Length: 260
Image (cartoon, rainbow, N blue to C red; front, side, top):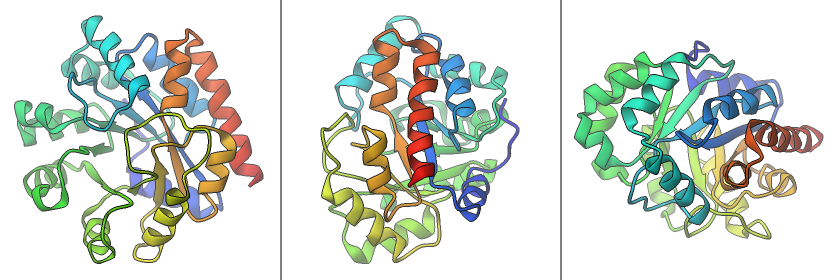
């Protein structure tokens, strides 16, 4: 169980120290995933996002889809992920990413309370828009779980303040239109998205989707407070690099962000 407290407080503290924030993503149930989470934190992750595999993901690209399919084929369940998180002790806050179908099936309060009991600090449910987040967000607030909301490049400027006001932990700026995955270059929209969000909120602003290399992370952090890195790390797990390979790549991102 993670015992480091709130997601937002930890990220704010890191930002206050002048550090660019790094949140690695790992698919729950994929191989030695708990060891990979530990390795990511040891290598410099400020928090870790853990995906609960789902059979029909709307936001995930080919790499994370394959990881989810492998995890599901191995018998992974949401209950199994939560149970494993209860036993996981790392020195950084944990957030889960899942889809509303699983939240609805478990029940809002039951899901939120189960995650908090397992030591999870935050949750991302990307297929629930701001206008429909109320019931889930209220249950999360009741349980003490921080609900992270997303803003996309197509989000109108006048909607951004409301998204940021409802978001907890951090606000997740989607770097480009499309699904998750590795790209050869950072999309110009990633920097623009960070700049737009920073203009309307004091919440930590992190950019994810399409952050594939340490240099791209540095470019995004010209405006952003930090980045979420997923597909590049998950691909290492799929390729058999294991937790050590994940830790090595997180260390590369950490070093690049620290150099600036």
